Length: 340
Image (cartoon, rainbow, N blue to C red):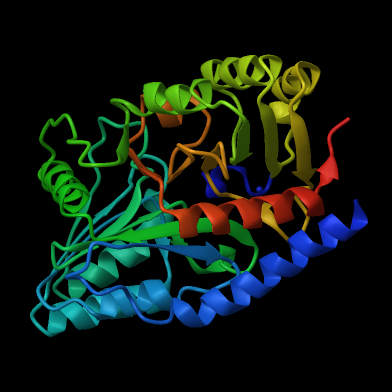
């Protein structure tokens, strides 16, 4: 939850190869992601921030023909707002849920702007500690599940990811949950083929992913305060799994980072003042092995995120996404400061 912590927290040949390949991959994918995926194909594609910019997300919004359903923790992006306004003006049914428990003041300008342009915008249900979900569904067929907020001031410095997919079961589950949250009705969110929801199931899903790893775990997260996650990571390292963690340093996580380091976890951190802020929430398990999978979503490793907030992530086994996640996080880890 970047806005809450921003002011108080975010061989040599092998290293060269990893960084070089990461940069090359980012440059190639920037062009490849310029157009949104076709809505009639079952696909998953990865967007990497800040490498690629928001063009693919903007294009996805602009591609809407019939409907846009967006849930956003923080919306402070005039270009995104304008695209939503323009879509509504063209007759597209645009509905937006914005968090009010923690981000009402930051979201108020967008709320008023959208409302004045015919967008159906509501404040998120107050029953959640926060609606920290970041997602958008286009025409009921294509969804973007994101770790990033649509907040312009963070785009150039935050490590974030989005998975754009057209899996019918996942999209339907996101829409079903959106409809309930939009109407402030109770729901147990459907999981579709790969979704991870909070506050209902994400804690168990993420602990299961960590505990089920056999060879390696590669992780980025903004927060590290939830004891069940710390315990699962420690146990994984102690049973011989290579556990690698990269995050922005904060005194709030010092005790847990020390616990993980003692258990054998490899840790690299960035200062809060560094040019890169680790806002992503990613777990890559058993990369390069049979059964490899990755989590990408809005869930931080905190009690609020996993037990009280509305959050959304997904599990993917797509080889191209796994490769790019692995490459990016390895590069980030190499660029940080080793934890001692």
